[in-house]
Image 1: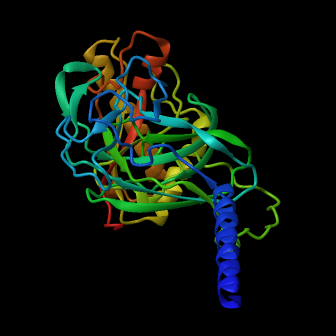
Image 2: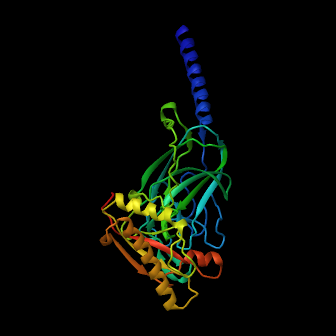
Length: 363
C-alpha cells in the first residue's frame, strides 16, 4: 500500500511539474499563426492569418505558391509557401500579422525561417504590363516590428541576399528596443543604394518567436571611445561581399550644375567614398554610366550623360585610380527607371550609376 501511495504521489508531482513547465514555456514564446503559410495556392492573395501590408496599392499583392508565374519549388513544410517580389519600379512586397503576445522591449528572442529563391518568377513588368520578365534576381528578407500592418518601426533583422534555390534555414536573434504588437516580413533589395530591380524570395516553415536563454543573448559590444574627429556617415556603404558582376549601383548625393557636367562640392563626399572603396579593392573594375530624363532631345541627352559620366571618371583618375580599371558611357534617355510625369520621376531618371565589370568571387 505504501508503495502505491508513494508512486501516486510521484505521478501527481510529475504532472504538476509538467503543467508548470508548459506554462512557463508558453510565457517565453510569442506564437505565430500559420507559421507554414498554409492556404490554397493563389496569386495575389495572403495565407490564412497573414495580411498583405498594402504599402503600394497600385501593385499586386503577395502570392501563395507554388504553381503560379513559373514557380515550381516544392514546399519545405506542408503544401504551400509565400512568394514575394521586388520590382524595377522601386516597389516591393511585405506581409505581416498581429501577434497574440507582444514582443517586449529589451527581451531577447530567437526566430528561424526557411528561405530560397525561385529560378523562375515570370510576370508582367510594371512599366509595360504586356511584356513578361523574370523576377529572378537575389533579394533579402527584412524583419520588422511595428504597431500596425503598414507601420514599420524597428528593423529587427535581415538575411543575407538569397541566391540559392534550395531551402535553407536562417536563424535570427534580436532584442527589440521597443514593444511591438505586429511582426512584418519584407522582401527588399540587396541594398537601398542600388537601382531597383526585379527579384524574388520564397518563404516557408517559420518558428514561433522564443525568448532566448541567457547564453543566446546577443553579446554586448564593448563601449568604444569616440574619435575626436568622427568619420562622415557612409553614403554608398559598399560591401564587397554583396557585390556581383554586372550589378548596377546608383551614386546618391551626386550633384551637377543644371544642364552641365560640372560637379558640385556637395558631391565630393560620395566620390571620395567610392575612390577609397576602389583603392582598397583593386580587383574591382567598373563602368560609370550617365543617364538623363526623357524630356530633352536625344542628341542633348547623349552628350550630357556622357560628359557627366566622364566627369566622375576624371575625378577618380585624378585621385589616383588606374584608368584601366574605369570605363565611362552615356546612356542618354534610353534606360528610364520610371515615367517623367512628376518632378520625382525626372529626378529618379537623372542619375549616374556604376556597374561592376570585374570582381573576384566572394562566395
